[in-house]
Image (cartoon, rainbow, N blue to C red; front, side, top):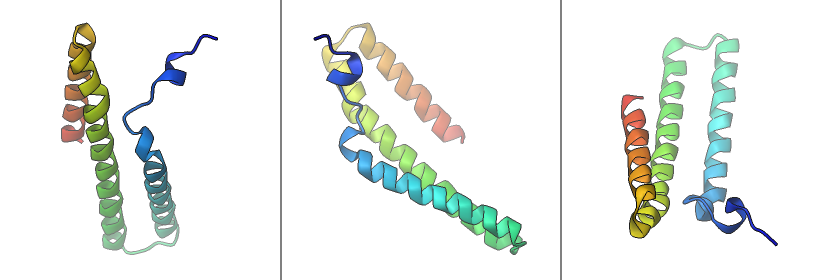
Length: 102
């Protein structure tokens, strides 16, 4: 039997997948709540407060995923060395740059 890459390896967030899914469901609920607030013509500042809370939740999720990526995927590639290590470091650096700009 030949195993594919997905069957033999796990992403860095694998052990925290349930937590990430719960957090994403909560963020999804926040997005639905924002939609309801707009539909119900709620006060602008109240909507903006909720947008800020949702933004912080997304940023927290992103930082957790980034931490897991560096601790597992990048660390493994660096330990193994070679061009994969350079590629993973560049990939992580680009992800950090995207998060900083957002």
